[in-house]
Image (tube, rainbow, N blue to C red; front, top):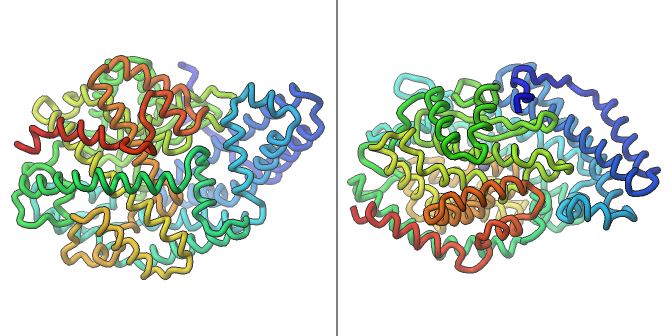
Length: 567
Ligand SMILES: [Zn+2]
């Protein structure tokens, strides 16, 4: 695979909207005039490669803006992309409709897979040119949110930090440092609270308006369709949230009281929640560059092509790991379809979280690498809940190699912490999901009422959260920091559904590591060619929607954590 270009050489010229429209129009005409199956397929292939070209430019533009949100040229290009993309969607939908209505549909399904057509059935009822204006406005608001978050310059202990960099202190063994950094962070949010509320309020109203224009009662149903969920409904999700509440929340209560004891504090405050050892959470023993080399060794030892793939990512410039001023927050994996290569974006801050982000995003990248050859672009990536299986499972599959990053003294501590945090995440994840259902079912609610909704859910799912005198948290504003709520509605339960699967992968890997790795690789190769529950089934995992799916994993975790909890 030496044919992969260096990242620096990836240069996609800014397209012209007029030219693109013409090219898509031409495809629509060609399909309308196609004689027989083969001609239709040929148009399909041309369409896919045009989509690849456009999505490569779009990914690169988003990435470059995220790498430096203060660069005006990058910002302008990103704004242009946000305007342009919704205007092309119309053509994709027209072509999808033509394929769906084709007299050769059965033959197309035979060749390309039924799932593609199920996805398109959902796509064609969730877009119409009459909601283009809403989509463009939503893109602008999303970029505004990104900029606002990236603009944070927080003074702390005589230095200036952005939000990602400041997070480092939540794991400090010094309680005073934890407390004051938490105060510093949330006062920044209080200062900008009205802006966050305004951005979200506009987004909710625009989404509701788009949904009603398309004939839906509210945005929830449309939101599920936009997430391309073809094999489960909000009722399944509701049952899963209840399962978390019944099975996971009580265990988390135990974990929190263990945490209180081990930290030796009278009351567990919000600034204590990120720390599970009085001496501080384990930290990787080197900087980003050092970690890249450890990761290289690890992936080579793991086999199944991970090592060779990692070499390409590291040596050809497809990793951007350091946190910098002006760089957007968070971590993600994106891809360039024309080159069939992914890219990992992160904000390393010297904590154990860096190792998690690394193994997580590599899981996404490796899946893409293994499924970028599908004929249908819709199969490059699975739907989000399935996509997170690859990433969250790789976090667990790399467990045996954690000595490389943390040394013999801290590796086991890291593993226990990872497991505890993985479980503790579940109630937060479902709270974020539940919140969004409430928000979109009540589109007329005021920002104040939304904050109350959050506070209510926090009491239900996260009863251990004690904000003390932190105003922003007490006022139900924690979700302002949760990008997904703004950018991709209903994208969050996905992490919890995938975690329910990753925990099963973890258990299986402890019983038969090589066998589990083989299944993992196979799931990566499946890419997006199947819907969520079929992917889960193909890996012999229980679906998160089956009753009792979480109990087995929680029981097993309880056993593994027993020596720690009983200390
Ligand atoms: Zn992910």
